[in-house]
Image (cartoon, rainbow, N blue to C red):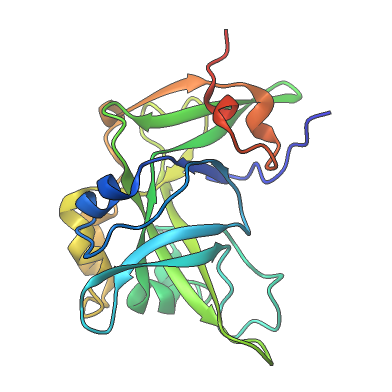
Length: 228
């Protein structure tokens, strides 16, 4: 039987683009080596783009599920933060002001409740180009060992395309706002208002996919196969 794991809102996405396309979109100095990932799930490593100490865009790997620095352990690790309230929540407020990142993706999955079942849908841009979720990150320090880098994806109210499936959606940033989003000098949430809007419905398309994607252990092209 398929396992319905981690089907919370914005709980899965995929990232298939090759390194050169990612380096070009995010203006990276180097070309990252990437393998296609069809079913990225919470607690798994995700790629994120931010600024290094020299102010240059760089990539790093984070564990999906934000662990605040004050947490006693990694059990408290939300994968999403609501954009409307993140600035007021102790869990997210400091990261929103000081530690923002771009999380590259090619699309994401959402589940529509149909009676007792849940039907997965794929949402992706019409042009199939990669994009970036608005992310925040933290460095959690265990009693011993290196810091654990973790992240969460911001969510917003669903646009007209997504709303029949779910009332929330991940915050997909317009490339014009990438610089603003990762600028560490911008720490007032009010300055980010224009960037924190749902992507227009006509920028995406959606289709139902096979329940194969329900199991987080499945990471292959079958996850994106349309249903009949």
